[in-house]
Image (tube, rainbow, N blue to C red; front, side, top):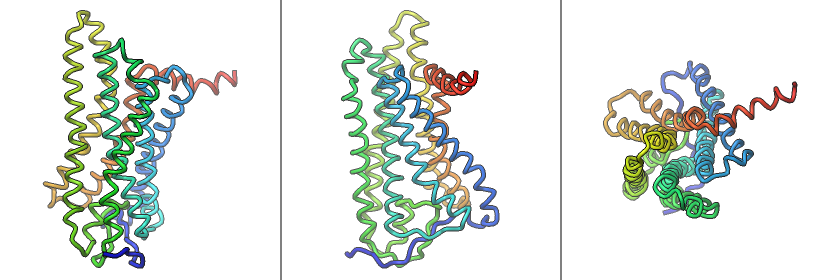
Length: 313
């Protein structure tokens, strides 16, 4: 094997057959892009600036918002470059780096949702020890563990991409680089790169989901043991936002997997649209969910936007 440094660049693809409408298609995508930046950026600012939000639950929420920003900032520049400027060429190193960050951040998101489930489990099942268990140091270690786990798990397949010769068509099927797209263009034995991601998905994303489900079974068991109906409702209400984010993330994962596995005869535009939903819908919805369902975030946003008017008065 040899390092491929002189090969032609890859060609990104927007919406095949709809090139004349690319400028129009970019308008809703740009609106979603800006909304994601504003929504998640506002969450990060509030959590940093408001001392009442300096709690483990909100630190994990900040990790989720930062991950969502990372996914969006990694994918959208090349998407808008293709739709606005028809800038389709992307070098191998840039493509592999983009693929690495996209896939790593997807694993990070799953890990952060698991960490948030652990936070809710401790808060409800062991409330008296909550602050002693989830210290700032422990939260930081969990965050670093999630990041390192994701980064190391994706690295082997991306390293292999650098060594493959690419003698097939250099046209990718999306406006951003994905590992599963790139390996289709390789003229080499790609068995490892086909099997390893399946192992990662089952060992991490699926295991994360099953652990989250198990933690909520234990949470539900604890809540059902609370005598007061009002206290039961209060305890469950602290989990609603997290449950909604879990559903948004894993439903899009299942939807994308279903389309890839069983929608082989579906139009390409369906596959492409589903990939945009997978990458943009969770980052768009997560700030909305927490802004609607979490009173502390609501009051923080109200204070933030009431500052200019109070200064004027």
